[in-house]
Structure formats: structure tokens, C-alpha cells
Length: 213
Image (cartoon, rainbow, N blue to C red):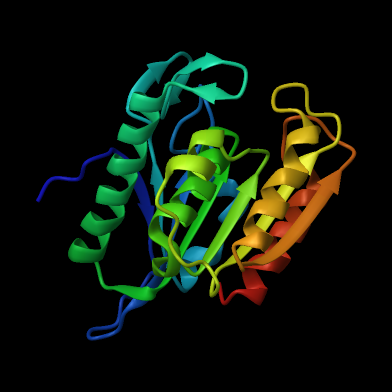
């Protein structure tokens, strides 16, 4: 079976026969690539598989997962296709590697955060944890997608108060949505722009510990 997306993988130095491992999927932002987020999770490969995925659309100097038709409005058809490809990619890795399917985690920045939060809706209880850094949930996802049960999901949502790309004003709605769906939500805000600040990084690493990574 061929992988539906290009990816970079990290794994434990010694993979024990007969053992299954947690999997963490990294989804980058617009114009970036599969190398971008690996620094945020350095060391976690000692106990889990890490799959950092490249967006399928050329977006110099890097790649993107979807295009947009307006501020906060992805092109629906392209967005839906990205969600399908990422879901297929998760299925591919679970079939190809010794993955514990009760311990699947997603983490993304910007476009990656948007897709991570969307995949939480789509996959529901298949996912144990999501870290969504500086993103939002499209209205059509909230209103038109078939929403799965997320009552066993833990989600870390963070956003910079000075974000000029995806306004901070959009962030509380992410927390509200997932709390209303029954997920366990950690919401953090920082005096920063569209980036992952050092404080954000520290909180993210602490959250990874609390969810078993």
C-alpha cells in the first residue's frame, strides 16, 4: 500500500517485537513543510512513532493542505479532500507500523491546527489527544460535518493574543465548541503573534506528559 501523503517519520531506536506504540501526527501550516514541527516534539520519538506530514499543494516556499476563498473560509472541496487524505494516511500508518490505535495523537499549527481540530470531529474516539496551535474550526465543519463522540478526547488549544494572521478573537470559539461536545479542554493564550512562543512550547510539552506522551 502506498502512502497517500509524503511524510517524515521518527520512531524509537529499538522497536520491540510484539509491542505496539503510540502515534503522533504533525500537520504543518501554510507555506511550510514536514520538517517544521519536529523540533516541538524532539525526544518524544523515544517512546512513540511520530509522523510529520507534508501538505499535497505547492505553496512556496513550502506546501499547504488546502486553499482559501476568503478570510477564515477554506475552499470546501479542497478542504474536504485534505481531511480525507489525512484520514487515509492515519489508516495507512496503522496498517504499516506497530501502532497502538488507542493512543493516536494529532498536533498542528495554523492550517495544521484547523485540520487537527476538524479531524477530532471526524474521527472522534479514535483520537486520544489533539494539540491545536493558532487555528480555528470552519463554520461548515461545525454545522455540516457528522460529529463523532469526543467525550474521551483531550485537547490543548493555544493562540497568540497579537496574532495578525488568524485573529485571537476566533480562539475562544474553539474552546467553547469542544467543551460543548464533551471533550477535556486546556485553553492557553499568550502575548505573542502567529507563532509558537517559548511559553507556549513549555505548556505544550507539559500537556504531552499529561496525556501519556
